Amino acid sequence: MKSRFVLALALLAPLASHAAAKPVTFDVKPADSKVTWEGKKRIGDAHHGELTVKSGKLIVTGDKLTGGEFEVDMTSLKVSDLQDEGMNKKLTGHLRSDDFFAVDKHPTAKLLITKVAPGKDGKQQITGDLTIKGKKEAVTFPADVKVSKNEVTAKSVITIDRTKYDVRYNSGKFFPNLGDKIINDEFLVNVDLTAKK
Image (cartoon, rainbow, N blue to C red; front, side, top):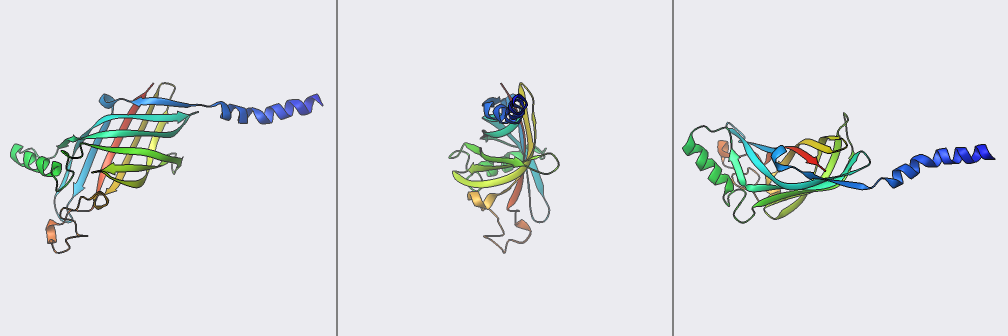
């Protein structure tokens, strides 16, 4: 009888341990985090640049990422590849204008994590609500997440269809006769977050 009781405790122990795990919030550290972007024309030019992380948090339960969010300062948008000051200023201004991200009206973009699932090659498959220019759309992407006692890091490359966020300038989907002036609808955002207790 005693052996059965001990066996039952042994079987229930992992369940009790899992149930006891409580969500822990780690604050994203903007100074230790980085966001870069890359956009291309259908033919020819490609440009890349940076954005500043404004704030955020990552939520861990046990040793797994289970939620979180982060916000990007869109007014910080920079172009990194153009060395000519005049050309750089012109492109930066255009990207900040109403043709693209309208940063005066929409100074932040935000990602709210809604689901985290196991992915391939040890990565996590993250689904979240991404808000740009006041438009919210679901996105899913793989992320390399590392959790330690006092720190969480999350690195990912997110492919974004700009037209879903009302960024239609020179989009072949809406202006098919632009030839080599067409800009790809999809652009890449490389996110590297560090969060600490």
